[in-house]
Length: 568
Ligand SMILES: NC(=O)C1=CN([C@@H]2O[C@H](COP(=O)(O)OP(=O)(O)OC[C@H]3O[C@@H](n4cnc5c(N)ncnc54)[C@H](O)[C@@H]3O)[C@@H](O)[C@H]2O)C=CC1
Ligand SMILES: CC(=O)C(=O)O
Ligand SMILES: [Mg+2]
Image 1 (spheres, rainbow, N blue to C red):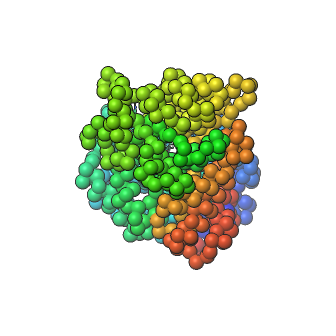
Image 2: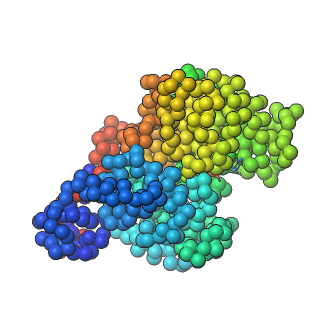
Image 3: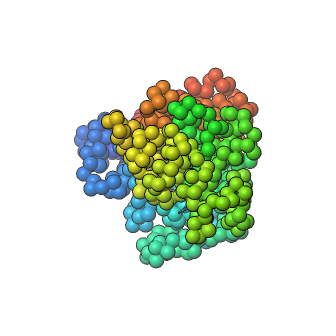
């Protein structure tokens, strides 16, 4: 579906040129220029979208570095949505790392200094009396499919940024999930920040106040969620980069009765399960015969542990209790084991706490921690996953120790951006004599193998699956996003893994194929919703593919007809 195949518009002149959803720039046709009062506002030549893309690409290439490219693309989006999405779609592999991880981390860290134009809805705690009015100002009369919101407490691996991320995540929904950008809304929930650099920066654009927590925070977030439920009850509500305690609490609190999704928990869990399923296919073993060490037990780490555990239960038939025993979680206090005591063990990790007697006699380090190295020595993991933000944590000693006990170690350093990865893929490959199966959170170049061949490092990033999960839930008009729907999407992703047909190939599909992959994920998710009886559509499972293709938004210009009674 083109953005708007035929649109009847009452907007004219500069109001049309400054509306990024409607603006076509030099692509307005002669008839449109005459009808909308644009003849004198545009140079003579009428360009095709391909010519516009070429011009934008040439300009982009003059930008000095990736951050400047990110800023350029941001400006382009402010001017012309179709051109922005068309350009990135044409150069997906090169430009996703510019508008998303790793460059987006730098853009968010510099948000206040790069700020040019408002984007989405800003809801600030001290101004919450006006929240309903502000919300309606941006949503009234609009049919919104998706709201991406963030309180920016744990942005990627760079921590508390006060404001940021939602717009990049929403753009990915359009690029990789085919979701109409006019049906998305990015929301910043500004509850202050504990980042002193921002608080001391007089150009900081957010609310310069310590981050508000506790009841006051809950009331503010609840007010927002209730507005979504009241005015946009069918919208998918996507939570991104909340701090770990809020991430789990909010997901549990709101997921019943509304399609709510936490990307860092569920999206990361799903893509990692797909990746491990693919690796297990290469090693010709089963999920249930793995031993998993997860380093960093925050939103992502715990989401991964739960999703892998549920995968073991659903796919291999283990009981949840048996499946829990396959996991060893390591966080700031070292291995999470009973002896740490209740103040160091969050409720959410309870399923995975190791018994003390199992570790009797194991050497704790000088701070009393059972270190990652000791865990690797004793647990002999087949899968080592990093989501700790601790760059270089998978040292040579640790990786070599892992290799002693397993022929093909599965090593997934997932922290973002690239500089925070727990190990460089090439190092992990060298230390395992070319035997490691590797995927990373941000894009990395291929590794050189001892036999002179190259190994493609898959990007295990939730963007390979969350746009499809969201699209599928929306397509089926599902009231909730259930675990079954997520597993269905995950299995479809795993089936598309290149390693399935060639064990030397990447563990996950290439990001250049991410739109087609997410479409397949979306179809699987919508089919699962229909099977579960929770879809809100009249049509049947057999119709899903056709409906999905029909609903995909494409960055193409529609035809505009002037109509004084049309959209103004
Ligand atoms: N590849 C992907 O799709 C995704 C990657 N991530 C990445 O994972 C990382 C973590 O993200 P979140 O889970 O959202 O953050 P988080 O703050 O919820 O979790 C980080 C965890 O690591 C622990 N940690 C920090 N330093 C440590 C150390 N030295 N040793 C052991 N544990 C340590 C923290 O205590 C915390 O529990 C980030 O870099 C993020 O970008 C997150 C979501 C998706
Ligand atoms: C990819 C992502 O969601 C993160 O790094 O937080
Ligand atoms: Mg995230």
